[in-house]
Picture 1 (cartoon, rainbow, N blue to C red):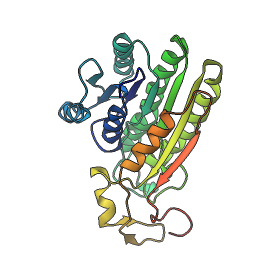
Picture 2: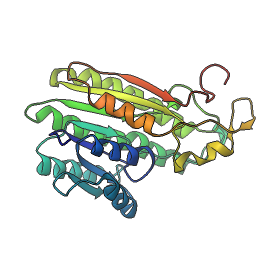
Picture 3: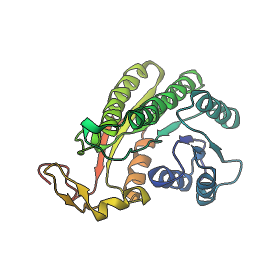
Length: 251
């Protein structure tokens, strides 16, 4: 069923971002989606199945702050407001022991996962603060790596741990403007980005073993729950993982 709520989703060209975009379209949201790969973005647009009056899709690299600002301005111009932002775009660099961290990979990962998330959240916050009626909800895609790191993943781990600080600051500073901020930390949602997990992942004890995954629909359902909460309620942090993955305890 159609409704008047508008959702922005970054990194909508694959994996979790694409699945959430399709799920929110099916739930009746009007959508503004973006990603770096035009062909993949067009595929998501077709999968969403919405008319041109209910969705816009634009190529946008979240590390480009002027491009992010332009994307948000176009969204507001088209739909008048923004109710929900799923701040999802991110990257994972090749694994490397901390002592062998590549500086280029470090900078690129921080630029996307932290700076890009900040640019998106900043634009979302300003729109939600200034619109009438004011308010909205920002959902940051963190990672279980924000809680427990994997071996050989320093750039990714640090960037996602920083998202936790970003989430808390937005939640605090958003209170006067009715802006809620949440973080979802996801573990092993099956997608083309997690195919390696079935082949084997390096564990803290040095072993490489396959890891269980879960259907990405579990993440979609979680994001829809968070997005659909009434304004006076919030889930500051949610962790959704494959039940049998090595995360809690010793695996």
